[in-house]
Length: 298
Image (cartoon, rainbow, N blue to C red; front, side, top):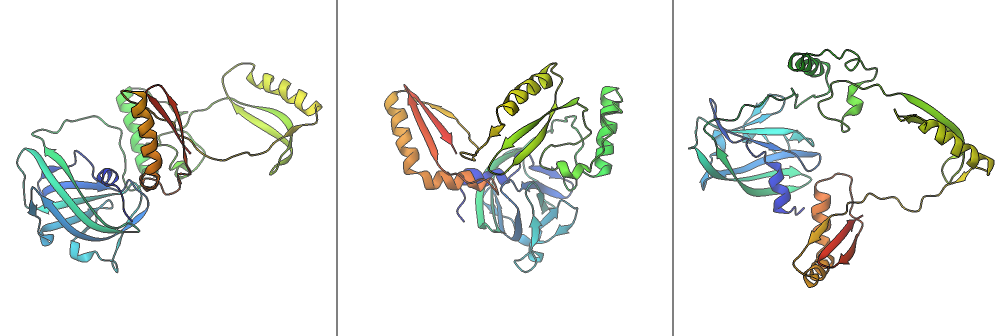
């Protein structure tokens, strides 16, 4: 599977290069899709190949392995969002920029190879950050730690926010640094009569809002529709869209760019789908206006 180099570089966590008591440390993070780490083939820093026997691979769980312990037969899960720390044991790098080249294998991608530049800084900037747990960020321990952090940092104790009645793990993928919930008033409108292709019957409509008269307005509209026999529903299309605009020096350049996009659809589709396990690029609509090229990715 060929993945564009710009996408591959996202696997590296920029700013992670540092000298530690154990050696030179740097971090990879899976920003593509769920994968399996099947082998470390090489690490090169400033043109010097790091001997694999001097390399330590630390998983997010704290477990440390040598490259020799990882193979297609003895692989390591590398789920989306997970990190792997690489330690060049007993070594240090000079302050300043360094060129780093990675080569490893992962299923289903095959052999991945890319190079980046990062820098060793004299002093890392200390930032106050909300606590996270890279392995289980929805566990009760880390949630309690975040709640305590909020109390100490803000001086407030939002007890109602910290009380929730569902398993936080169901929110995985919907929110980061989960700490609590907000209570919003909910009113119900309806029932509304639906004559659809997939749903048919009368349904209540829950509305979470603080906008006065909203539920009442819905009910008035629903009353009119019900008296008219209900609502006939159909799905004409199902897709998600993104619509960037590209600005050029002239209308001709914008037109040429549109042609370039259509000529390179296969490469664009490959790049677009490489960062998601579910998204599929169907097509791209284009609209030209003066020196602007508007693209609508479907």
